[in-house]
Image 1 (cartoon, each protein chain N blue to C red):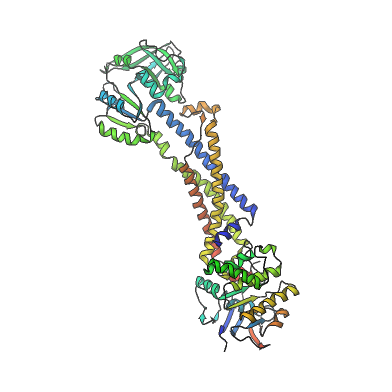
Image 2: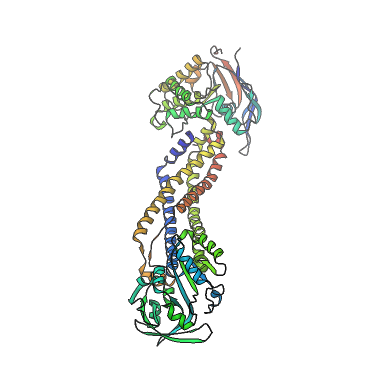
Length: 404
Length: 235
């Protein structure tokens, strides 16, 4: 207990030096935690947007469909799947889709797109597509209407009620060309989605493909996103004839973003701590040097080497325990503040949207991450204290006492 | 017959740090009995502090051995020696050397804490020691708030806190004025007379030498004279 007291009071003997060190830890932790929160906020938004706007949590396909994208590969037990989904309490929304790859051409340009034949109400419930319209209407009921992304509209010089010609292969492998009229234009934060997707009514596309009631894709949004893995596993067992895949399997790059977050965090915080480590070692070595005589006296009067070691270790840990939580508290406040207001990066929005990032970033960081960072700070302090403590242990009382 | 607390046999210390080895202490035989009030005197460089350090287990002799109350401390492992010092020897240094971040009370209590003394006993003994050294009411002062004499009195109390077999005092009055030095020596003399505490001084301060009952004079690392000035204290 007395060693704790001595260690704590020793920190404040040279107040300025300790405060500078604590401040550097505070700033380091604040910067590190905030960078992580910014990165996580940006990535999470990208993941959430992709899930909400296109992928959903889980998708059903024919086992061969995603390899070839041929119209004939419809889900064999689609009706049964839909009937089960309607009864499942885990399911928040689902959308049955007919999907085909197509070449879209306007009077001036052409480009490759994915045509989605949807049930408008289902798709709206799943992705909120109707709310994303910036021009025109969300399917008026007329035949061969399409809703296109803003980016695609710009690329093909399209506007509401303009025509677009889509060419694709039907179920028999025959080339089909059809003129479609733009009913509405939607805008999302992901320009890649905007540029590559065209929605039309499922009945129209099914008729053109000749797939009858067959569907290629059932996208499902769950009420609780924590249940994705468990539900996917369950459905894989329940529907062995279909490919049941979670968004992590459908989009490995998004999975990588989420799963590599901790590694990124350890690397970034590790680099910051490495820089701080040398600051701590330097400060503690100075403190030991200044107190050589005192340490000699302590050892003379009966403080054994283990306790000397613990005392120096505690001093370093105390500095880290003052600076670390303060820095993290500051980071938490900054994250809370910016999470509610968002950080506006609209001046870079064009570039960000190219990569599927939103122009307003809402930083966020889970409590477990703050805790991990704190553990890292304390661990770094412990490591930093070893060298000065070892130096102190090498002191011989009789020589140390003679030091001025 | 008084008990022998310090027994130094053929004690030598040679420093080999420079190009020429320096013999600081040469074949010293010294027996100190319980209750003595003894001064090691001699000019600077005569080897008094080196001898004191070897007796206190702070320095390792090059030759010979030191037996403290029947225990040979020569070659003892470092942590064991630290523990031995904690339980058997009290130190008073020239520059007081109190822990600046602890109060006077805490400086005294610290030693007892290291010994594992229970709280009530610690608190009681701290007050008793503060009273003995005349520092009642100063317990909560930090060393920086005390005068040199007061700090040295705290150092004496700290040295006595562990109930040592003897106290080694290296030039304890060197930094004190006459009155303060006299007060401090009064306290030590009183402790010696009333409680039988053994004091070994390394000094060239006449104020200390005048009060010593035995004076050992060292010249060039050797004992030149060992004389009883007054009747020694009997255990």
